[in-house]
Amino acid sequence: MDIWLISGMALLTFATRYLPFALAQQFVFASRWQSLSSYISIAMLSAITAKTTLVREQQLQPVLTNPLLPAALITLLCAVAGLPRGLSFMLGLLVFLLCR
Image (cartoon, rainbow, N blue to C red; front, side, top):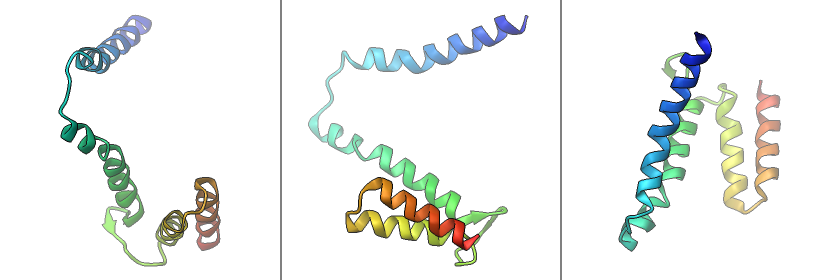
C-alpha cells in the first residue's frame, strides 16, 4: 500500500511541476520580463540566506556572537572582492568554525 501512495505522490508532484514548464515553452515572453526573471533566483537565495543567518531560536539576532553572521559577512566580502566562489565558501566556513 505504501508504494502506491508514494508513487502517486511522486507522480502528482512531478506533473504539477513539469506541466507548467512544458506548456510555457510555447509562450514567448517580452524581453523586459525575461531580464527581470533572471533576478528571481538570486533574490530568493538572498532571502533564505538572510533569514537563516539573522534569525536564531525564533528571534532576530544581528550580533557577532551569532556564528553565522561573521561567516556570511566574510563570504559576502570575498565574493564582492572577486575571489573564486569556492575560496569564498571555504573562508566563510573557516570563520564559522572559528566563531563556534
